[in-house]
Image (cartoon, rainbow, N blue to C red; front, side, top):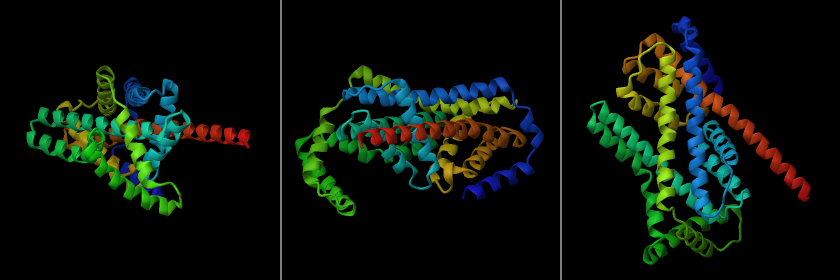
Amino acid sequence: MVVIGVVWVAWVLKGSNRPSLRVAHPALLALAVGLEFGSMNSFARVQRIALAAGGVRISLSQALRITYASNAVSVTVPVAGSAAATANTASEYRHQGADPGLIAWTLLVTGIVSTVAFALITAAGAVFSGNGWAAIAGVAATLFGTVPLIAILVAVRSAESRETVVRLLASALRLSFRVLRKPTAPTQTAKRLLDDLASFHLGRFAAAKVAFFSTTNWLLDAACLGAAVAAFGEPVPWRSMFAIYAAGIGAAAIGFTPAGIGIVEAALASALATGGVSSSRALPAALAYRAVSCWLVLGVGWVFFARSRAHLANQHSHVD
């Protein structure tokens, strides 16, 4: 699939206005890089704040390493990328001293807040562009996936609801334990996990910081796309920028190819052209954005991932 994606991009570039690839403004491309690294920094801070609420404190450098490595796994592994990235993040948290309850709570909170922030930003962009119905539909579709997660967090605060959740979770655990051939009692495991979830909470100040950095994460990534457009001398279509950005995010979520290669570039180029960017500059701008937000970040992520695996291997060898 990677070969197909590379060939597709090469074919599109062959038919595009190739001289436009050489007129990118270096300073604006550097700005795009800075904005993207700022976006990743914001998400790493969200992780730190959520973990700290459970008593596990990690440095910003550790949070960045986990963020970049898990992102690399997420965008590289087709179809199961999100699950693999979650497993990697959980493993890293465990090595930092977090127990299963805190890990689950951190993943739930960061996932819910990040999704809600994206929905609100996309809705605001749709309203700003004059498409209120699109805003309503976008928010509803985006928030739909968070309903089960929110229900779990709410249910663990109620004794009556918790029993229902325990039964459902125990059934799922029982099936997974059979597949993995683990002897752990599923009902006791489910109760212990939900008890742990109920013991964690964010204070108002911490919650405000989580919301702020989750929003900043998306805004800086979208601004990176805007900087890529400006780097090719095109006026940035700010009124429709978040609709364009959402098109790229949606294409990336399809996951048919590793890192969405070919699919995301086409979706962004088409959306940019529809938004007013000249067709000869839309594809180069989309490719520049992807080079920064995907391939550069991906490279950094795999370096961190390799270093983490080597470090864990050394630890295991010393223990043995």
